[in-house]
Amino acid sequence: PWCNDKGELELFHLESMDELSLGMYRMAMNIAAAPAEKTSALLMRAAGPLFALVQSDLVAVRRYYLIVTEVLILTILPLMLGLALIAREAVQILLEPRWAAASLPLQWLAVYMTLRPLGTLAEQVLISQRRTRFTMKMSILSFCVMPVAFYVAARLPLCKHIQQRCFARSRSS
Image (spheres, rainbow, N blue to C red):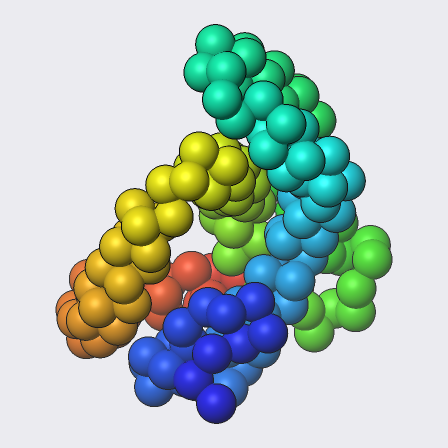
């Protein structure tokens, strides 16, 4: 399959990464995704019905959107930035030494995962406002653009160089 269990495109990752690098990336992704997904899932269960309830009052939608965004940031930002700062130590203590190369991708993915729940929240607000056509267009655009972007990026010498340097430095430390 060309998608993982989170629906992320991995066709070109498989093609451009060796087996060890891909394993390290997947381990880092699983660790980085857990705190943000578990924390935001609790909040999103209540946010959907809340936005559906106030969908006709734009002032209330804005107010609740800002409140939920603030709560998400105040809970997820410290978790994810803390994980990014202690990734090397966390991998050394919690995992076997063979996973040491996952620490550098874990740092980058933890920073990325800080913003990911905000996209989910924005999508819920758009759906509550019956702007499903916009979310559909964005999904179709992503479906068309992202495979091409992954394909091109997987073949860029700079991206390959960065990937090799990151994993080589992680393996040697």
